[in-house]
Length: 79
Image (cartoon, rainbow, N blue to C red; front, side, top):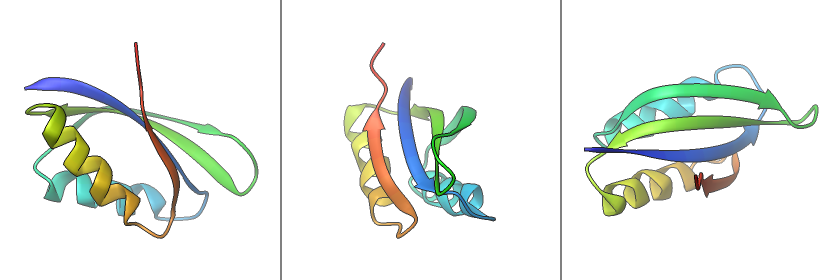
């Protein structure tokens, strides 16, 4: 496994972290760490470090997250 970082911008509302964490777990990934920041009043960006098998696995997780109505934007973190 390797670590993949993603940034997920979501509507800032109660329960949104659980909504995002659920598809990550369903895709067979594990959240190693998370940090959150407020971009604006309406949206917040969550920075995840995920444990995934490979790049294709990370892409599957990102596709699952894009399907969530609360997700405004998702990008990969590049170090």
